[in-house]
Image (tube, rainbow, N blue to C red):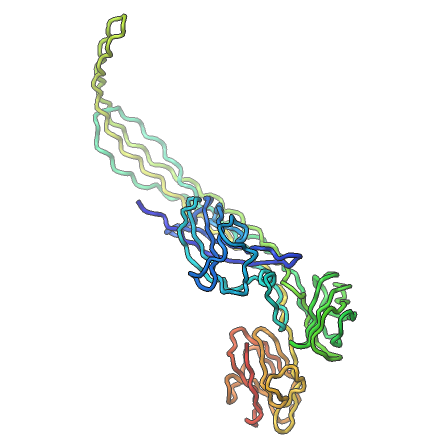
Length: 484
């Protein structure tokens, strides 16, 4: 007997909305398939989930079980943290003490005879759960939420089996004959039509923006008024962060916002650093990203193919003779029952009719459109640079690391955009890869090598860890750039 083997295709998605309390759970999706790659559909399946700390075989911090019914494409949906608890407390997990690994075991019959399917590291910690257990947020700025991808439309239904052929005439019963050969297969049914494309998911909310209004770093209770982009989703009472640099920031509560004009009023609650007349500013919600747009609707199933005809049934063998009936006993007390007559031999089985061919598989339903991506939350920090005759002088001391404004070492962060406002006649300012020499870097850099104007550098996620800036004509005018 061939034992069924199930394969899980796992998709782990985590989404939260920060409210009075963080949601205690995260979504988990999987597709159950057999060893031939065919989805196990519309079947009750038992799952056991262990969250292990440190390594794939580390201590089990939390364990729970679920009984889930797969969809008509084999999809399983559940929320980790809302199952039947075996051990541990989900909302007591210290997400800052990771890494954590999710271990999945399954009983395809829907019971508790679980078989280990595999273990996978959770590569990111949900923001709201981490904050609820004491985690803190870095000071570099808030990342805007990316809209979730719209769901894939269902696969078109498999064409139905070809129609059954008409039954052959029954032959007379006779002696047992040899078993007939299996008939040939009937023709294949036509292919079902393709399901319609799913509706695209709507665009997620927008919060990340910038303001060119000149502002001062202000103490708590100070009211501020500034202008941002129009059409944003802010509302009165939300808490926002207003950042000029990593060390010059304010946090406040929105007291008024006009989405049509972009005018926002905020009362300051906390502030970091100092400065007057600063701009531009990066504005965003001070907390977790907003919710993603809903998933697009599932496409319709394709229509079924027609049924192929069944081959004719072979003739039956003739029936054997019936044995004679025993005589009846005399009336009165019941006499013994006469012995049964010998049964006639069973007639031979007729040949099987040919099988109708299996209909072809319907086309796969079209994939639903991808939900739109939320706004980019990265913001620019500006370095003002002049030539002193002996090197490049950075006048905004809050953003250098070497202890000196002259040719300082600076640190940039992946995913953020930086502006270098250069005023150094005769000394082209070049952002260069590596630690020495002149190898101008081009990815994410505009106006590299100018002597006057603004060079912008949006640091790629795959950027090297070390760069340097250097004068094209004077190798002593050089400084280190570290990427984190």
